Image 1: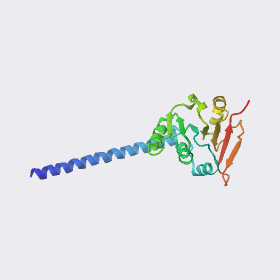
Image 2: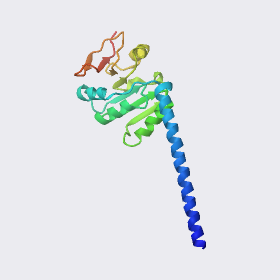
Image 3: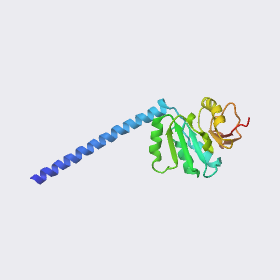
Image 4: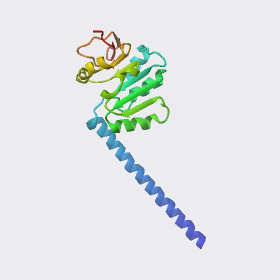
Length: 193
């Protein structure tokens, strides 16, 4: 009788533990979904790296191996994961002030993107001298706001990879257009004054 009673108690205990674990997972999933919604729509509106942008860069953008790249205002680092997958770069770093996005990106990067480093930091305090490439996917107003800062702080040989949008006061030295003319990547260098 004691055996049956202890067996039933262990089954009840396992069932309760399973229910608690399932409840925690459901609550966590709801929280993460709400955080993702807040991140995407309220906290930090960002522009996703669409498949057509990835295809265009994969087909036409040539980057020097073992170079370093920084993504300013990187969101969750999806562009950095793309560069990590298709280019042999030694260092990939991203900066954003949105801690939810950085947290999400760090979790995503745990599996197989060890060369990507994400920082919750305003990129205006970043030393651009150590980067060979600067990736930007910002709106024109944001690009114009940082134009002088970039000019002052980047190396003369650094290339700015600007996805879709353009600086209003600078001309790119090269434009890469998709075959359907819906996507464009513009490349800039430091202006010699």
